[in-house]
Length: 183
View 1 (cartoon, one colour):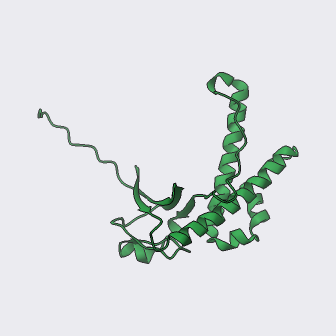
View 2 (cartoon, one colour):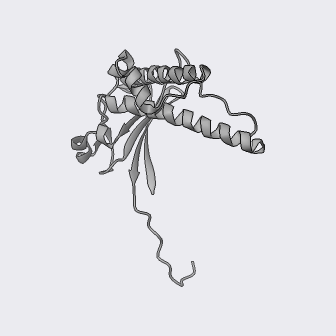
View 3 (cartoon, rainbow, N blue to C red):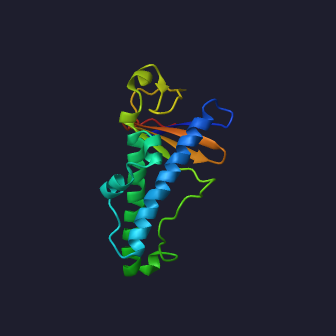
């Protein structure tokens, strides 16, 4: 089963500004990718795939400001949003009773206040730091103590004036021993 270890990074954290800046770049990249997809949709063309989005935006400043694995995961996030929209739209046309209203296109994040999730897969997290009991995502000058030895991914999620760092890891599901005792 997949479990999550959560750490809260408040505004008074030493590296809060760096995380906020990267999340802002991630939002800009997200909005650029959404723009490409929405323009294709409105002009009647097929919505661009992950590879088409990547090749269109790989030379932008926002892409260059983020680690490449993180930027590519932003593109996958947009691709997933639009695929989900298309599936919901098809299902709505077949069974509109399942929905409260017609599904809407994915929207842009706010120009100034908007922030986007930073996702680091296991390749973008320092293995050396993890052996020492620290979570250290690439491209960010932060290290957070942990007891984990294996991590699948690290997500930095923006919330109201804080960031939540989630370390996702896999753990074997244990079944309790069954015996005939009562209480």
